[in-house]
Image 1 (spheres, rainbow, N blue to C red):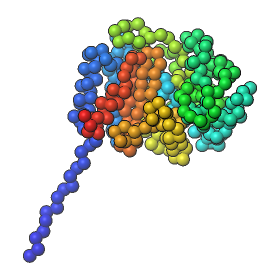
Image 2: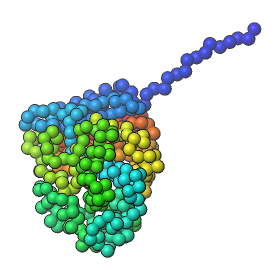
Image 3: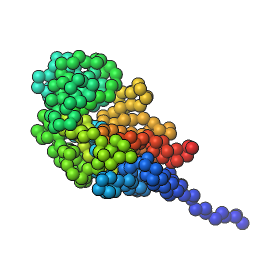
Image 4: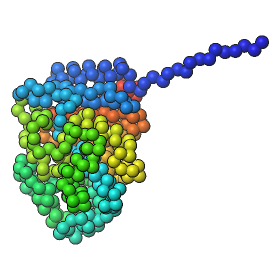
Length: 348
């Protein structure tokens, strides 16, 4: 008689992010709030499941209004992701090509800019001088200033290097991208993003910050209820003028895994590492920082402006999204990325 073996049930693979890690992270955030070391909103998601979506600390200290998952924050340079996507949407509609010279879309284009392409602007390889280093720039940040006024400050400056020669992060290129988006689409930058990105994705709490009510108060000090120095965001428009929430940014993250906004061939362009940042070894796609963390690919962007710090990070292979929006400009968002990475991937 041949002996038969009882079938064994397959062993379930433990989740990459355990309930214990989630509870420990939530406890860490609570303790940091008690120690005046954190204020903001956090979202952590894994394989389509939101594990944490919560606010910590206060959105308005004077009014004692708490931060929540729906609190709006200035996201600063995280805006660049949306500007890049707007360009890709126009490209997918045949309205422009990323290899087009920018002078095709600009009036009175300096001769020194004739070899600069849209691709160069998207990847910070244009050689353009960064507008924030120009004398007179600081005098414009507290009053409404049109992007073209900012560009007028740099038009007569020589290039820092030949287009395509190297990476040099700057704001000028993304301000120019916003101008190109308006010229090609026939709409304002704000309206184009609303119609082509925010509405299709369902981002109802995101938009262009006109200093309206409803955005968290930004602080320079954790020990003070006085707001940080005021910055009017009209001058940085397409390089840093958006506000959003952790929940809306998660909707954005989910859309980046689909063809909701552009066909896959154009989406791939956003996450192609075109150039290396020699300062830290990371790479840059279109409006996207690309690197590895714990031997896994990670992409996203940071944001920082008076009163606010933020990070949007995606581990695409592991289907992890991590977002922190803070209304304290001294917030160390890298600490949370490192802590979570160590806990999730088993390194201590």
